[in-house]
Image 1 (cartoon, rainbow, N blue to C red):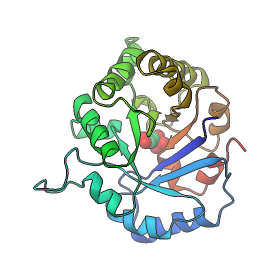
Image 2: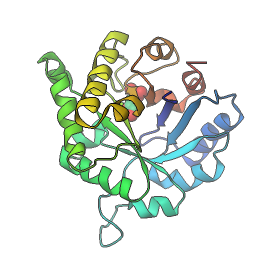
Image 3: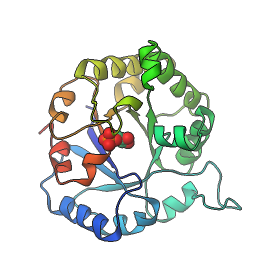
Length: 246
Ligand code: 13P
């Protein structure tokens, strides 16, 4: 009963013309109505994207600040996203954790602020190659989740995206077994930490080198409830990923 969810994280890519053309493509496409679709363009294109997206396609910001409006140069508040009609935000992406030094705690505080502001959150977690090779994958993802659980008790507006760092933008997709193993562990953690209901209802997405070629296989796994797609979300084949369970 978990609605399949496919997110497109455009990262820092695109121009007005390209964003327009990607969205017009999605608007015209035949999208599986049983799939929730959320695209995430760079902040400067959020208003444009929200204005032109139709066909059930929703829009997410790639970041939000943990404070309200105020003297925070360069930041965007949850209230401002809401005001602009944006209802989703990606938080904790590994690129922001690595390149901008976002800590588990900061990610948790941003998640708290986003939810309090009425946004739904795509919460990204995942281990590095070194962590996987050291056998600490489950420790890392549960540590990242626990930081959020310390701040947030109601997870009904959170979608979890498991994105192993070594699979992001590398063409090295996790095997169906690797994805399922971690997804199942995350669901077990949700059950133990929050409730059986939260474990049952929370969608857990896989992200990292998802393409139209590997999506169908990954989607067969019982605990894979969708995808967070980077590079391939900028291409026409994104539609095939959206429709991978049809
Ligand atoms: P790629 O699909 O380009 O590997 O990126 C995944 C990702 O980071 C989505 O957030």
